[in-house]
Length: 385
Image 1 (tube, helix red, strand yellow):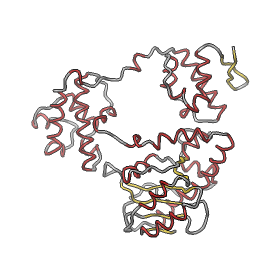
Image 2 (tube, rainbow, N blue to C red):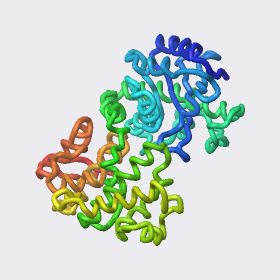
Image 3 (spheres, helix red, strand yellow):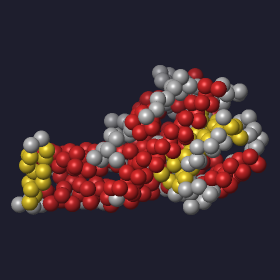
Image 4 (tube, one colour):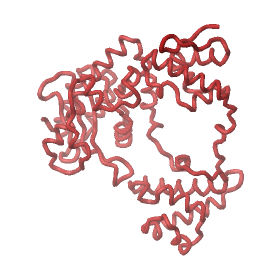
């Protein structure tokens, strides 16, 4: 097993990779103690199967710059292959503002090729590469050095088997003409906005049943402060205060340190110092927010006049299309999509792009009464009227 610990060695490997059609990539990281993931290891493998064609890049033990890797990521002639790429891509975007291009995610491709919803890497290794994975190093502290041989073997397997999986799925997509389907899905992963959390929008991630505008104004300010504090100091937002404590604070509206100390859910560290001052300032800002600037809860779902019978028919149609095309139903349309379509909404993901080709067109014809659904043996078929 080759471990790269210098910029020169990384540059040499990436120069070899630049002559290949693709390179498989994975990372190991820690996030339990920080807001942003701490990159601990990068695994890379070339299509060739030589002894030095799969390597570990160690940004902790070595004194190296990852710029040669980022230069490879910018090389549009080499496909960068990941499995479940989102967290890996977030690391690279935060670290260097780089998102690999072109990009291929085998989890998405597997969903398009009929392997089920959000299929795991281990399943694909077993079903495509006909191999098994040693999972004993799955839950490990990747920041500790030296790495054990078992850890390195486990990490390297994440990119060596990925070569077989990629080649199989790429051939399958070419055979079925579905390359553009995966390409459309990659646009979301390549969009920098996917990896940006703005403090002013953080409140939208907090779940609460209270839809009062004033209450939500306080939630917005508390969430804004927490996100800004966590990002600035690179600590997990839960170390500042958790969502249940945030909702409690928005309900009790503490105006002093004495009132703040009565919180049942607030961590001890948050009852004093900068965090306590930030909480009190956020509550005050929320209470003083002008009425015309308080957040408005999204009631669009409540206003939908869902046609239950039509929604049920759309679910049957979706199941039929899932079976016909061998694509995971969750990838084609969500339950919310189906309800929205039955209520007359047309700006719905399931009616756009490749999804329209697979499901949307017949869904619209069903809504218009131009087709019916019938059984044929154990299958559901679409019948023109």
